[in-house]
Image (cartoon, rainbow, N blue to C red; front, side, top):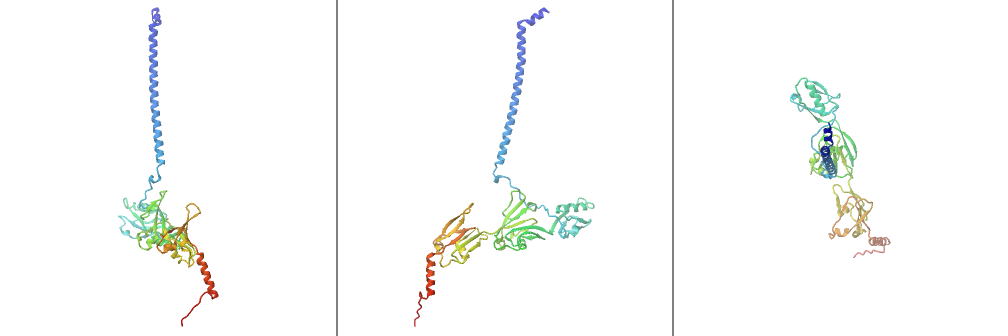
Length: 367
């Protein structure tokens, strides 16, 4: 016992104990360092991922509008028209050859007569729902029926016609109607109507079959413009398209150019399909100049965009008529002002006074 106590108290024992404790402390320190390094790496990865996500979101939000994906505009029609009495349907299928290509009228109570099953109620349903109801009724007699329903003639289709027509509003029409037929139902175009007509259609009816059709910003409608004059002149008859339910036809007012001053007929004149009109064309509509007009000092008063001011553009009408000056065109809302000549007016007044007094003229006749 005494020897053991001496050995424990000996300096070598103390050194060994100290070294053992130091080893344990070093291993604990190394473990802590490793854990800290792992945590540091994990935090660094999380921060890097966070900045990548933020950067990608910034790039998406800063993407120009022109680079944003546009809504798809195809010609697939998903009808939302609700069937009603007097609508004409065409039903086809392998088991229904007897009624193929034969229009079936929806009766007043909303039913139709289908072979094998009898009466089926379809009023208030879409075309797709009507197909499901007929297939459901036929499934009692036929395994997996495949009936296709199409609308041969619609009972009514609300079409909105707005703008420069004689009777604007919502028109309920029956059957297939073209653009010209719809404008005729609206009472025709007003004299101040423009020739560029805009048509808006819901995408559930497919895209408008015109060359310059585009989806709107909401992605729910397709919008196209058509030149009515070219349709009426038979230059683009294919653009006289069929109108579908809930279409909106907008007929804008035409732009005007105005002539005032010393002309025979002042007033406003419709530009029509043209975006501009020459000075000579405007003067011809105004029936020409008066004899007292100062043709050298005419002016075009043109609106300044964003203000209520007008800029003045000098026009030498006399030089234009003589072919010595370049002609200036007038745009929408321009005013052509032709002033009167003070000297011509004074001479005309003097001549009129001389005629009235009888002293200014002498007529001689040779014997």
